[in-house]
Image (cartoon, rainbow, N blue to C red):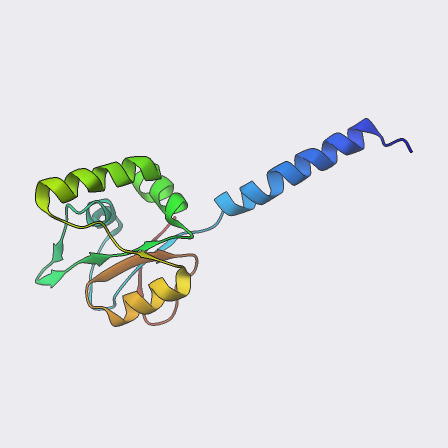
Length: 135
């Protein structure tokens, strides 16, 4: 049996590119508890522990394990190693803990809805939250 080399190459390229491209192209939506009034400019400071209050409300950022890499890249322009390194320094220097990591969109959405001060990110915003920004 003889297969056309061009067909093999085309199939290989399609298989190699289709899954990673789809994963990278996913939208990231930053959501907040409806009681908060935040802007997109606040997000880097919130997720890096520099902004801890919005008025008198304690901010509670939360990471989403399924979208963390994309969020860090799009919103903070950094990778996980740099993000974790910043939080290690922040924890030792200021005694501030990094955001907890939730398992996915459903868990993040529920946490943000029911927790005053919560800010997180999901693939698509559920009802009952405020959309702060989309990446």
